[in-house]
Length: 491
Image (cartoon, rainbow, N blue to C red):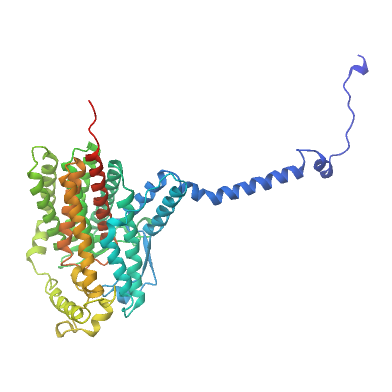
């Protein structure tokens, strides 16, 4: 073999870092430079990823679903909590919840959509005039509040509820958006009902719901009454009366869905919510909630009966039959709650109303300050209350009147009446399922207005549900009006 034909095998000197640095594109310096560039790019991506997520189309729905599920489950905490004031009926701390976080994300998302000109619509503030006035009056009442911190606690919560209402009224724009909200409201009803039924079956805190269920920042609540191990259960919603108010509204919505011509999936979900929620409503043993739901149901049946030729009664009839069967095992406890001794629960409300009237007479314009009834009532105690049950008046209208004055009460009533008016107008548009759902929600609001005459409702869940329902009625009226104004399709 010819040695000249062999390839050259010259030995290279040992490879060093200096040699690597001199080699273009393959040296350590080049690699370090690329790593620095990659690190800088990763940092930029990490910093911009929240903004990129908020600018997507699915993020607003995800955050809205979080707000709707948070109504019954209450993922929340209270900063600066004052237990003594809470024990007397005041909102005892600064409420910070999953709704607070979701609201920040929702409005940041809408801001990004507006900046990128993908969505140039504006919040429907004009339709929220009564709620805006009430929020402003509550802020003004802090000037006369004896405890400004307590007043600010309620103002901060009201501001969140106001933003929830404005968002739902402004950005629920289609039939699909309406059904999205309805679906999540029914899912929340099912979850809250399961928690209450679980507590009932376990006779108290079951192992799965001990303290803070599933390790989540929420808790369950129940109380004994009447002896014999009977319980009034509020579950994750709070007090039994608050839970009753929640279910009276949610069940009215579920009953309305059964009258529509929506798909089987919606009706199946509504039937489950009606069955489980009906049991949960009974287990709250809230007489005011029972009457509120009965009034809502009667109003729906009255108006739907006039259109029975166009509506299917099979679903509602089955729902009524199921509720009747569910009441049979609890008929003794129901009868005892309605006709038995309530240990002075109803009579104790009368002295509190007299106390509220004394406060209103002395503070008719601005009241004593929002969330300050429990502070002011010490100076107006009447002989019937000394040494007895001292709590915020069990009448939401009188409580608002005493704390925010006459103008505050008028703005508060105007908010509810406006919701009823929008529901009635949407019903008269004959927009199919939207009109039926609007009438069901309006009936729910009407029943709840009755219950507010006998309960306090100083917590977040029911107030947030009412704001969602009122905002949804405003959105449904706009959607139904737009659909009725569109020209019919040419066959």
